[in-house]
Length: 435
Image 1 (spheres, rainbow, N blue to C red):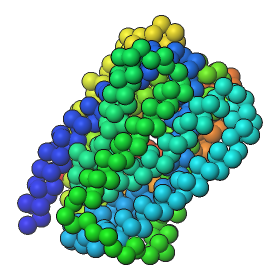
Image 2 (image 1 turned 90 degrees about the vertical axis):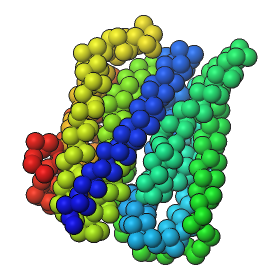
Image 3 (image 1 turned 60 degrees about the vertical axis):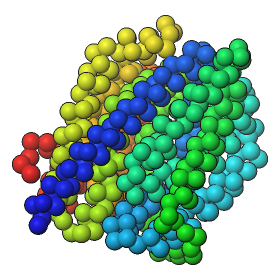
């Protein structure tokens, strides 16, 4: 019986992984294309303000979800496997209203202290007008992301991908194209308006797709105290992950010029093309880990972990090769003033290579009750990131930022691999293992 179950697990992984990869590649290519267009329309300085605000919106929206992302995916995946829709509906009634209220509260606070935050931290008065516009994106961004994790738990990957940049990139590209046809003059503020509008459109689509499901009903919200421990751990992990992921562009905004923020952001978003493969397979593997662990199928867990890493390595190899060996050609798409970011792109690609090579190890730990180990590795990586940023960015600018990100990310993923080995006796990194 277990033999056939494991074959079923791999069949789902391959079929869904391939479909997920198509969506992820489409999202990555569309996002890259959109970044090139925005940079070309705005130039280095204006696009620097725009990308800096996107970084801030992402951070605030992630903190607002206060750890519900992983909890939702884990609980929904386990509940669907046992057809417990009452539990899923109750979790939705708990998570979504809380995130809505927290979003409004954070927006109000940020607006109340706009001058102090913008001028006191970034010392860039021109950022204020973009800040006042793009803060509104926090509300729809927070809500459509949590809807996406509900769909991920249900393994509805096509809908989940709409919440993972595919929907936003597609809608924003259409809005930019529409206004471009009328010879609209673009600025960071005007593109910021379009970003907010696109975010609300994506949210509306996901809300409609959720409520048209026949199993979805209005029900009593679950008790938050049941999940407060797990959400606190995941919130800390997410906060530390935000330090690893976004410290470089944010601290560049503090210590460097806006042009350098734009160059680094362009290179960073391009390097993330590599992780599109990781996120594609990961989006399938994550709920699978939760279901297998809930069923105590350790052999199936081992098999899915190893094969998901193999798929990631095979599929990401061409992208990594281009980013590592042809960085000047890639950065040339953004314009001649962005060619100085070629070395940045190559350095960031190394970090993403380690990220892919270690597989879905973070999801494996978080879906199997090993949140404590995940917290330790993320905390160590965050400390390394901050120390390196403080030491390297003032001295070396965008090169220092790139090395800070790559080193801290690599340390984090290798530590996660070691924790997985200690917990399960295998590493997803070991793609040559016999399973």
